Every structure is written in structure tokens, then in C-alpha cells.
Amino acid sequence: MSITNPRRISKAIKIGNVTVGGNAPIVVQSMTKTDTRDIRATVRQIKRLEEVGCEIIRVAVPDTEAARALVDIKKRIKIPLVADIHFDYRLALTALQAGVDGLRLNPGNIGEADKVKKVALAAKERGVPIRIGVNAGSLPKTADKKSNIADRMVATALEQVKLLESLDFDLVKVSLKAFDVPTTIAAYLSIASKMPYPLHIGITEAGLPRTGVIRSAVGIGTLLWLGIGDTIRVSLTAPPEEEVIAAYEILKSLDLRRRGPVLVSCPTCGRAEADVVKLAQEVEKRLAKIDKPIKVAVMGCVVNGPGEARDADVGLACGKGRGVIFKKGEKMAVVEEKDFLSALMREVEEI
Ligand code: SF4
Image 1 (cartoon, rainbow, N blue to C red):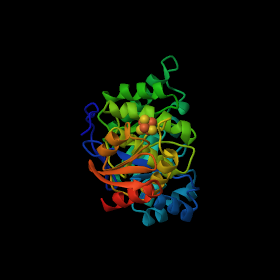
Image 2 (image 1 turned 45 degrees about the horizontal axis):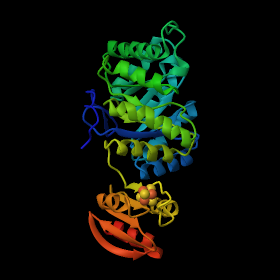
Image 3 (image 1 turned 120 degrees about the vertical axis):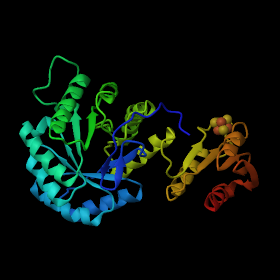
Image 4 (image 1 turned 135 degrees about the vertical axis):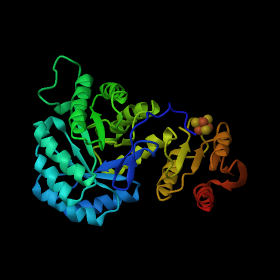
């Protein structure tokens, strides 16, 4: 049971067979880092992302060749495909013909309303949703320079929402991304009550994993805790699988999604009776191959160890040369230090 704030009510839309918004689970998505024209490499990367639980994939469509490659990519993957379009609305039209499940447009660089209109009409014919993806770094030149960035982002998005609504198009999703976490939070908080559409949330260009994951967890986590956000992407300068793993960790830490194991391990201190760092790293590596949402604890001593270990599905509390294995709160066995890893994993696998 989650104790986050009640979720903002949004209109549910379908990206392929995945529901975004309404009461649907918060959807995890990512973006490929391959050259989209290289169909084999792109499909291979998407397959890896499917394996780690990515639910929607977006690909960059910088030119006509990339837009045409979408036909083959779409045929060879299972998850919904979204085309990311900048500058040239004609690429969006080609992507729609290729059968994509969603479009992401940056209104700041698509240009005149007329071009957005043409795309909206073609998307409407096919029932394909459009994400209005506003980025703080590329606001339209017409945006009111006197107001703050968050307000300008919101105003830009709402203008595009209105334009799409005027065309009787309501398969809309909105994102308002900035590198700056407080700006991003302010923008989403502001737009949340101004329109009914689902929100795609993330911190853009968050950086390398060590800092990027923290920035994303703070920004995305704060919004999710406030009940805002229907789909998330963690942007990292790293292989996209890391984005998906980080996204699930954020969702799991707020108890919003369950996927894969949760590892509880103590920070170790002068009381530690074993090499907890090495042991926890090894356990984490082995748990990565397991899909089941189980909680595993590795604790360094008998002070806090038994409590946490007992609270987990499977836990180990290390002692001097020996440790106690707990399973579902019950003491299962006392094992020798050399058997810590194998004994713990044996119990995990049995669950
Ligand atoms: S469980 Fe024991 S070893 Fe680990 S941090 Fe707590 S007191 Fe230190």
C-alpha cells in the first residue's frame, strides 16, 4: 500500500497497447541511443530494454531515412514505439505512415501552428497520441520573456494543448522538462491543475549515472510523491537499460510499482562481522537475474541485523564467522561464513 498523496486524476490514453494515465500503473519508458537508421542495432537495444522491463520506447527521427526505418523496427519489437521529431513536421507524417504508436513533438522547434495542425490531423486519423514535449532549453521565440522559465514552459504547453483541442484532438500527453529540478517541479505542479491530460515526467539531461540518478530521483520522486506523473523517463548519460533500472528503483522506493527484488543492505560500521560490501555486491549481481518482487537483506552484525533480516523475505545477519539466515521472519539456519552467499541465494531461489 502506497502512502504517497492521492494521484492526480488524468485522462487515460493508449500508446499502442499500453495505457498511460487514469488508474494505470506508472509507465516506465526510455529512449534508444543508437542511430535509428541502423535498424539491427536499434532493434537489438530495444530487445535488451524489453528484457529489463521498459514499457514504451522512443527513438530519435532526425531524417527521412530514420523515419522510413521505423517500419522495420516496429515489426521486430514488442513494446510500443514513439517517434521523437524535431524541426521537420514532415518526418512526423512519415513516422505515422510507418505505423508508430506515438509521436513526441517539441512545439518550440516545429514552427507554425499550421504544421502542427497537419500532424495532428494525420495522428487523429490513426488514433495515435501526441506528446507535447516542452524543454526549458528550446522554448519558442514567441514565449513571454518576462515571466519565469517554469511559467513560460507551462504557457507554451497550454498553447499547444489548445491548438490540438481546437482540432478536436485529445490524445495528448505533456512533458515539461528542465535540467533544473526546482524549475521542473514548479512547472509540473502548475500545469497539473490546468489540463486533464497525462503527464510524462523526467529531468532532462540529468547527467552521468552517479549524479543523474540522484537528480532524477529527487525531481521525479518528489512529483510522484505529490501524485503527479503517469509515465517516467530517467535521462542518463549511460546505456538505456540503466535508465529503466533507475526508473523502477524510484517507483519501488515509493511503493508505486513492484518489479524485481529489493536489496536491503546495511552501510556497515565498526561492528560489521563480515565484508558486507562485497557480499551485497555479489547478491545484487545475482538478484539482477530474478523478476520476482522479493525483499532480501544483508546485514553486518547482530545489533540491527536480525531485525531487518527478519523483516525481509530472506535475510542474513552476519555474526563472527557464522551468520543467521531468516526466511519470512523465521530463523532458518546458522551458516558458516564461507557459505553466506550460497545459503542466502538458495533460500531466495526457493521462494
Ligand atoms: S547492521 Fe551492524 S554492522 Fe551494519 S551498520 Fe548496523 S550496526 Fe553496523
